[in-house]
Length: 535
Image (cartoon, rainbow, N blue to C red):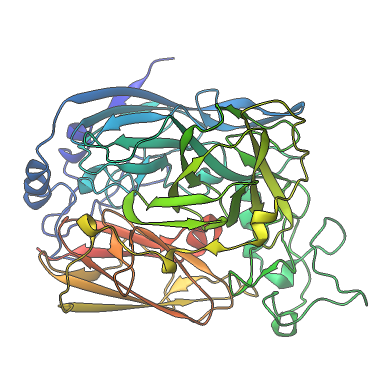
């Protein structure tokens, strides 16, 4: 089949940027594009300001990578194979590894039956490479390819995934590791550990079908099958303490059932997440693409110092992670160093990353990722000596010990955001409910024309006010922000139900940048918006 190649130059040179509008014209489903009036007065994704910011990064040696998004049958272990979409034939996709200062030149070939894109989660990159269709680029149509090229200025643990519909909740993700040429940490081994919740291809389920089911709200529930986990001992639905409040839900006639069994989750609660833990009952939870019945085994020698880079690539699940009989020393979160702190366990919301150091003991130990509030686990194994491998349901005591969350960390001295009063405050109320599945920002569902204006050089304060009964991992593209009180530099932060979180960032990367909940289903329902730099 003939492959149609669409380069960045061809796309952005084709007149799809609206003059002075700062927005690529809205694209049709097939990626052909259409002209649409958009807000004026904003920096365009391919504007001179973006080019100037890229030049300041001093793009260095080029690392060439080819990536193919394709239909695939993947082996999750234990005899379980699933039809899905993936980057090649592996889960996670093949790791992309660079050194800070390199230029990444990656060509994505789209062999999927629908348009796709690639977003580089956590990277401060040029805006026209950010991978958001209808905002910073056109969709990459089936049979086409797209050339991404940008400087990678900051070391750290990152990852890549589509920003197209619910595609991220399939097998379309891969780690992206940027090494520090002046690495201060000393360690003998390094592992990249990607956590995921899995539904695609199981008994006919797809993420699109899950979204369709959730979008009908509680009134559209099919109570005839599936384990929703929300019935109390008396046969009625649970109320209060973080479960979905059924007293407010309309029990209207159910909509036609989507493909696959019901996946709506009821009654999953977590004190760490402020109540309700999630919407989706996943049949599998994975570490590096493996089910716990057939886990990946990492080998080392007793006394080895191991760096573990954790990435939560899940769609709807926070993970509480612990290594049995070990304590972990946290060194980084979301790619940026923190003051080192020991802990028994970590909590990772979707999109968050943590780096830790551990000193391996002698024996065989479970690396367990508990699906927070969902009472299921994912598993990998550390083996440094003789012994029986832990079973799939093992629960190390460390999971019930000290659990570290980002608010307990301090930024490393070299990356701490300096004291400065904010020049601008942007308040973002997180709104919506499970009953209507009407998730939004400030009561408005996402459209590409939305803008919250900022100006280059400003210190910007984002005020997240969570008016919902759910927790939301909020992610800002193209920047890192600082948590309050000298807290860590992050690009994704958990905002608990009924709570307020204020974070600051410096507006030093011009363009149009998405800000959204990293729950795939909340985002697709409408909890996304745009921060736009004024021209």
